[in-house]
Image (cartoon, rainbow, N blue to C red; front, side):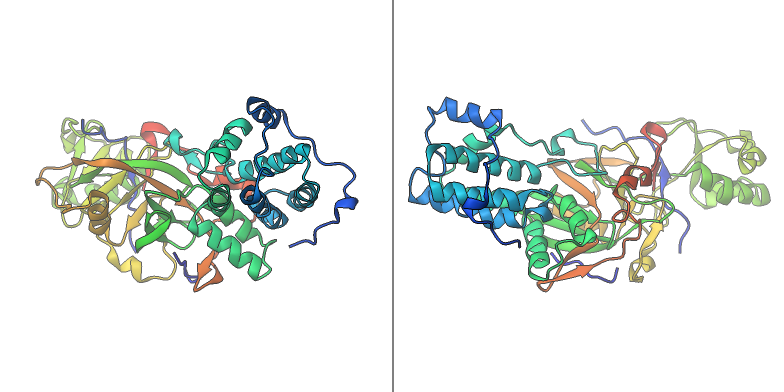
Length: 435
C-alpha cells in the first residue's frame, strides 16, 4: 500500500443513535557486558515447565533463529524498545557462550521485543474489545515459539508485524530516518492492522481508505475526513452490517443555523420540499411530529430542540449507503452526494465521520457479491456473513515506490501524542456527533 505525500458543502455529520442491528548501533564485545539482564519470572516458569530444556541453543536450526534477534534488537528503538541495542549485545554474548543459562537470556530479550510489538497503541478508542492488543504472558509467548514448525520463520513473522509495518520500518532504517517522530508514531499505529484476513483501513492523515486482505491493499479510494476543528478520531471496530437507504439525522447545530431560519422565512412547506420530516426521537420507528407544533424561533435561537431527519433520496446527505460500527464517538463511514470534494488535494471537510468516494464498491467488497439495496424502504440493514474490522488510523509516514512518503500532520497528533484523546469528539453514546 502506498500513501501519497500530497494529501463545499454543508456539514454532513448526523446526530444519531446507534442503529438497531438486524437480528543501527555497533554491537559491544561480549567481554564488555558486566552481567546479563536477569530473566523475568515468566521466563523461569516456561523453562521450569519444560525441565530446563533449551529453546534457542538446542540445535543448528534454533541457533540460526537466535542469530536473527541481534539485528532486530539493534534497531528496536524504532519499534519502541529503547534498550534494544543493549539486549542485542546480551543476546550475541549469550549465543557465543552457549551455556544453558544463556538460553534464558535470549528468551528474556525475545519476550521484551515481542511484547513491545504487541503493546498498546496510544489514542485509539476500541469499539470492539477483541481488536485491542494484549500481549500474552511470557510463558505463553515462549510456548508459542517452541511449538512453531520453524522457529526462524516464527521470528520473522512476529517481527514483521504486517506488510505495512515492515515496509515502513525497513524504509526508515534504509534512509536513516529512525528518529523521525512521524515514522515512529505511524509505526505504532500500524501495529493494529492485522497481517491476515480482511480489514478496512481509513487513514485520516492522507484521507484515503484501503480494503486489506492479508495485510495488503486490494482496492482503495479517497475519503473526506474531519476538519481540524472536528478531527476524525482514531478508532477500531467491526462492521457487521450495511445500511441501505439511510436517514440523515440532522445535527442540532445544523437545525439551528440551516433549517430553522429557512422554515421561519418560507414556512413548514420547505421541509417537505427538502425531504425533511420532524420526528419524536432518533429511532427508526419514531412517530412523526406536526412541524407546525415546533417553536422554530426557539430552535433558531438555541432555546428549543427538534428532531429532523432527511428521507432517503438523491440528495440525502448520507448518500445511498452507510457503514456503522460500534464506537463511543458516533462515527461511521457513508456515501455522499457531494462527489466534487474528492477532487481536492486536502479533504478535511466533515464533522468527524468518513465520506466515501465509492461507497457501493466498498459494500460489494464487504459482501463479496452484489450489494444492491433489498428494497426502497428506509434504513435497510443487511447482515454481513462475517464481521470485518475497520481501523481509522493516522499515518503521516508511509512508503511510496520503496521510499518514505509523508503526509501533513493536519491534526498535530505527532507533535503532541498526549493530545490524542483531547482531539477526539467528547460526546459519547446516543447523543454523539456522527458526521
